[in-house]
Image (cartoon, rainbow, N blue to C red; front, side, top):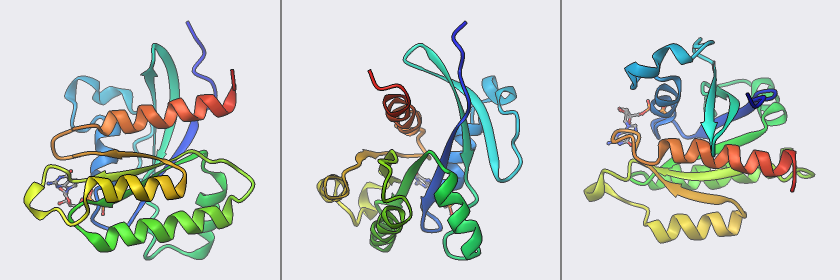
Length: 179
Ligand code: GDP
């Protein structure tokens, strides 16, 4: 069997309330009883599991408890410097969270200037059509400016969440063994 290799460390970033916990529980299998045994280290902070992307296994360590509003400067730097990739979440129903995502993108750039760290800008809660405050085209334009990928998701509907995780693994693979 193919070797999944050392884990990719992926961090969920974003303002509070955007859906980071919901993402992490989908990743960890909480919302999928068939796969709930797959998550090995489901402490609050890190969930490590093997997932299959494009027919090849990959091990992903998901760090989900980095609370940007409250955690210490040390924790912030530690996460920013040790992560391999970021899912930068905002809620399409909350313009402030979209602005927060921009700020976080700038912070990331400051900490990781030399690296082309994979980042996907994720507009979550796209199921809440009537409460939308950020349009798809604004999200896409923001990602273009930030030179990162973009996806809209609904953790509530389990729509595109796995696509976001798979997308980040694809980008990490391109970086790790460029072909
Ligand atoms: P966190 O603070 O970023 O970890 O956000 P949570 O995952 O705790 O989500 C905050 C609230 O938004 C919770 O009540 C979730 O159930 C809800 N939520 C998260 N994702 C979605 C989504 O895609 N659609 C809807 N309608 N609600 C969501």
